Image (cartoon, rainbow, N blue to C red):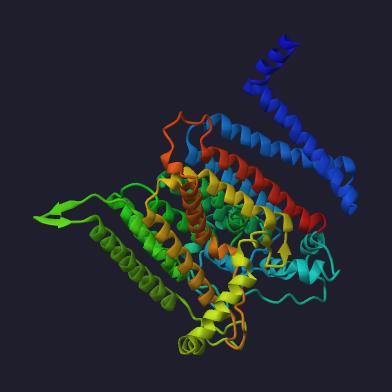
Length: 533
């Protein structure tokens, strides 16, 4: 018996055997998922054999790509993580139906315009008929407005799109209010290539998503290369379902999120060279131009290590160098904002844009905020309490109308696990890190809620509308860093003696867990849209 056990152990120790057993488990999952759908939802659009074959084929393709990544990328954490982010993101690209990310219609139309060679912002731009039809067949809030009211299923939207307009149907022309170029630099080339190859509007939309995801994965690669501390937390958030959902859409927030990770990575990395300082300043300027809320991250510059320098008999302390870097970031922001704003004025024929809510007047609301600060602070605290700090809204997809409860409940646990894996690093951090992280997190929450109050909430309301978890992922990172510091210091981990390194470092463990969780979340999103709630 003991010899049999030893033989089984030695057999299981072989990598090929483990991969083979893993593949058998994947096939079992494919069969089980289809069986579950048939029992729970009465899934009857495909025959059981065809559905099982499609599911097992899809699972096998993902497993093969994971095997290739694991085989050819062994010790490079940044490269492996970015490839797994790309792979998990591709699952979200196709699990999320067309134009169902927040404001994705407007972003896709601007990316399509750029991919067609139009770098001006024409309010009367005439899009091709198939683009107009795509926008009509897949409106925002499809889940609540179409599926929820019994007017059709998501599959019906595809059938009606490919069938074309009815003889007596007048398809309104599509339009967009977006007047930016930078967020779509990775989408436009793939749109242009797809059009050259003869692809229609639907194909270009998926190509734009893939381009956005490629840009996000590339920024994550550079961020993870630079990052020196709290890598498990960065990985957990970069591959989290809500981050991938955003990056795997046409939303401009995909590039903004990637730049956020890059900026944070520089602040939690090593000493900066001149070239890295320039990249940090430019990334900060682009973030602030997209949304002013990243200004809250500027205090993180205080965490960058500097050595004392002497220049012409003058001593430049690390504190002075940090102040200088902060000034450079602000200067770059001013220059970038001025240049891009000037380009918009020259290239645009849009007039004054009205807000979606006629009761919103930002100037009046800003005046009201400063004239009644106690009331606004009470509204801010109530909204934060009502939203549970958005920590349990990370499974809210679609145009905030598709909620996957499993992702809402379990994402905080996965993120908290990343903080626990970083507890030893947190225990050895200076207290300044905790104070700076806490301050920046608070400012990011405050700026985000204030922004939505000014642009989306009539000041007569006692609450703030429109805040989404994707706006606060940078704040989540800082809160998790603070949690890691508190966990580590509470357990006095800073006094641990040096031990042998783990066979699998914490960052790698987090990557494997978070990747599997992201795949499961993509499957649940697909199920919610195409199979049943």
